[in-house]
Length: 110
Image (tube, rainbow, N blue to C red):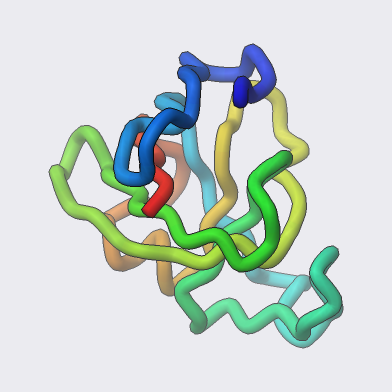
């Protein structure tokens, strides 16, 4: 399975392998309480994320390359829609890895 050419996409391979490397951002203000693409209500305080192609419910480990911190999130929405980004994290997920704007990350499917 291959992902769009945004970032450095790699084959998914075995669980735990790197799915993608690229830029991550966070979203929340204005979306909290609204319905996600999966149909659930978005909670900016939950450990969730938006990805363009991974199936809803997929769990991934996101590692901030600068801080070395990681967080496990569940994919429950589609995005990111900003150019050059591979994943959008909820506010809580972003805070867990020290992301306050945009950061370089790796995303590994669990």
